Length: 147
Image (tube, rainbow, N blue to C red; front, side, top):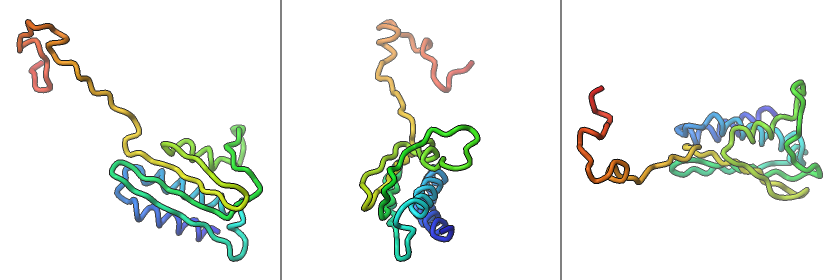
């Protein structure tokens, strides 16, 4: 099992090496692959899972499709001393968003990672709107103004 998880991590890490959040992606791929091999029919002899990696200008997504299970995936409420069961909590903590679809015949887990996780507010207010029409150039502070 560990060899399959390592290969999945290396595959995603290689394809997304220049992504600022590559470590988060590799961690999530590791969790998805370990869960598939621990909790689904993908762990049976001859079983498999499919890992898909997508990349765009400011982010990436990874999807892992397994062979299904009768267990319904959920993010458990665990105590501080719990020794396992934190995989989907980890995914929830580091991915920009994530979800799963499917049923006992197969499920796909997808996580998205945005390079810019926070929105930037850009003001369209001109100095004249703030200071009025009597704006004097000396009244405007710029990045190269002397202090």
